[in-house]
Structure formats: structure tokens, C-alpha cells
Image (cartoon, rainbow, N blue to C red; front, top):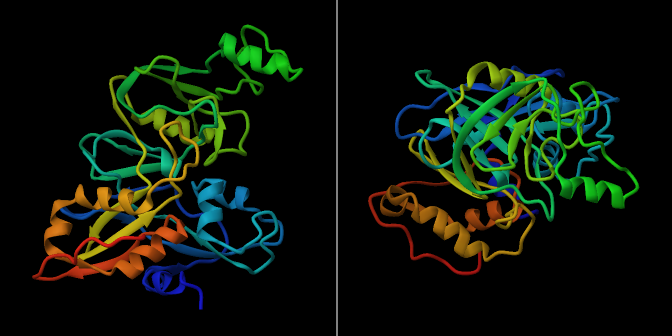
Length: 319
């Protein structure tokens, strides 16, 4: 039996079996105070012509998170009638639930509109190797519809070396890689923007900026004003509480430049856990399940413990 099975078994009772077709946009009610999980995992039946890129676009999911949640399924030809798991359940990122929060390890953006008890969440393309996205706490400093693109010298040199020279200015339109809208951030040189290429959302594809599907960036533009806080995190391991149980959601770690890295996963998991003091003090974790979840890196919140009156076991080694 695969070591992943016991952990997934803790998830499947929460899944909803759905007919084929897209789900609603990912506007999700916030959980009660003290709880951390939103959404619900869903399962659809693939059609013959479906690919993970198509299914992801229809359901506000990125390509890599679809691949991670469906190991062993061909992302380009899942096959008619194949069960496809939609990872539309999330542990909210740590820290204040306000403004925009980006988690690089998830390739995902969360927006908490002021005065509303909901969160909107969208997949992102992030910086590729050599062009990492920043980790920062900044804000939206400007909003621009139908932006022109002025590629910086470094990008023009890169394209010229590949035999694809760029002009100094690309006007708005279908060939503009910024898509129909851009948010300028307080970190110089970085934007949140749309794209003229649908493929690549939810992957490492950009020169450090954050790419969104065009309908998503336009929706975000209608809600998030100039001055909105933007926290950019890199949290591959998120712990959260729901209905008195504790869950862990694990993603493939990225280094501080937004590229896959070889890290001490044991130390990273323990550090993430220690940020949640009440979990350490009130729960006994099932470390065998923790190891399974960390090994799977499938982005699914999995139950790993229930509250007990005693302290957590001594922190283990060898995760």
C-alpha cells in the first residue's frame, strides 16, 4: 500500500463528487474565529478533450497544483471519465487576514476585502529560475488598465540573445504580456498583472512578477484599491485548525528566489508548527501522518491530530 493512502483517507470524507464542468469562482466565506480552513475538495469526471490546463483555468486552479493533487494521472490526456481531484480546499496563510497575501510555495494569491467576511483566491505564475519573486511586505502603489509594457534592458538583452528582439515599448493589446491590467507594487520592478498566455498560470514562468488569468486580474482590479497591503510569503507548510482538528497542507519547498530547493524538511515543518503556539501546547500530533503529508507535497489539507489535554510528543527527527 502506498504511504500516501492513510493521509488521503483522512481527506476523502470531505470531498464532494461533482458532475463535469467548472465550479464557481473561488470566493469563499471566512471560517469562524480561531479556525483556518476554507473551501471544499471536489472531484469531477474528465471529458475526453480535457487537460489539466483547461480544468485548472475553468476552476481557478494552477497547473502545478492540479498535477500535485492528481499523481499518476496524465495531465495532457486524463481520459474520458477519469476522476480528477480539484484541490479547492485551503488552509489560509499565516498572519493578518487583510489585503493581498501571496504564498510563493502555493503559486496562489489570497485577497481579503475590507469589511467583508470572505476571501478570494487565485492561482499565480511566479518568477522562474534566475528571476525569483521577492519576499516582502509592501502595498499596491498604482493601478493601470490596458497598460503598455516597457521591457527593461535585462529582458531585452535576454530576448536578443535568443534571437527574439523586443521593442522598447509594447502597446496594449493581445501581444502585450501584461494583459488587460497591472498593479504596481511598492517593491521596485515588480507587478501583479494579467497575461497574453493562459498556459503558465500556477507555474514558475515570469521574470519575477505575478501573472494572473485575465478574468481574475480584472476581478481583483474591481475590488482592491491603491494602498492595499501586499504580503509576499514563502510558506510550503501550513498548519490550521477546523472543527477542533488540526490539519497540515504541504507544498514543494522553494528557495528564497522562488525556485525548487533541497531543504531540511524536518526543520521547516517544526518551525512552521512552532509559529502556532496553541498547537504545540494543546495537541498530540500523529507524526507518521505528518511524514506522509510532507512526502506527498500534494497541497491538500490533511488531518494530522485532534486536541488532547496533554502536550505534544517530543519533536521527532527524520521527517
